[in-house]
Length: 124
Image (cartoon, rainbow, N blue to C red; front, side, top):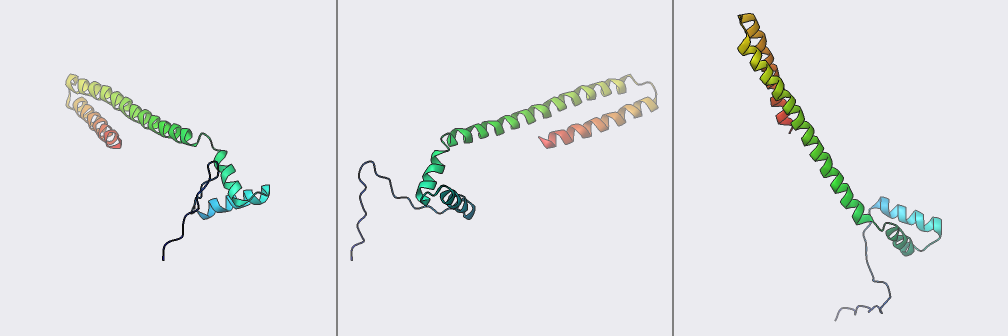
């Protein structure tokens, strides 16, 4: 037995679409149809038509997310740059130290700064 023939739609008529909607979306459309006294199909069409810039908005969200990543990386590099300057200053202090106490204090400072740089680099 041959499968049933598909109905042909005339030009200008709608196209048959079968959707599986999540429960929350289904309830939203159902509520809108009931509130507006529209058929379910009309409620779906009107909801879709009310979002003309959906693709553009999605693209803008992507750009915003990428910019947040760029700014976070820039902030991390700025922090590393500040730590590098502090590290060089600590090296200068160690090299200029005249006593063992001064040298030990400078080495402790170097260890702290190096640990901070390592932690900051790991975050990136």
